[in-house]
Image (cartoon, rainbow, N blue to C red; front, side):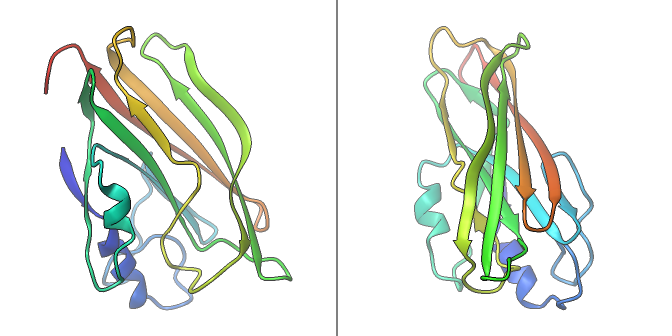
Amino acid sequence: MKPVLIILLLSLFSNVHAETDGWVTRDGKPVPNSDAIKSMNGFGGWLVVTPDSDWEAKWKTSPETTPYITEAKNVSYGEQLTVLPFYINPKVNALGEIDVSCDIRITRPDGSLSTNTKDFQCASGKLQGDPRNIRLTSAIIKYVGEEGDLAGKWTIEITLTDKTRGTIIPLRTYFVLLKTKN
């Protein structure tokens, strides 16, 4: 497991120029796209898989507090993970509202689908605050490794669609369900 600084990215945006698109570092340089974090046409998405049961309390801290959220790649039976899909800079319509949908696909180690949800409304309504603030979608996924679940690599794919902007961002991450304790 490795620590992820969620609010570090929040602080990165406070010093960013408005013309900079997508995810950027503290010094304003673009973050390279990867499977789990991408920017396209100014819209950005990021998937984090965490074992932290207190992730929500960490997330709901004041902007001055830097929460440390652990990222997990391995989980044992009986342990819980939470998949957190974040986004930045959604485009607003004439009414100042956003419209972001999520396609959610979770694939078991044998290639069969655990979840296959299309066009789930994961962020909508009047945009409050700076569009460049990091926001959490409503498509939060909880997973507990239960007896009978297949051991091996589980793949999570979430496609964020900013319907107002017309931008689609496919994101992918994974975790490995271990037969033995971590």
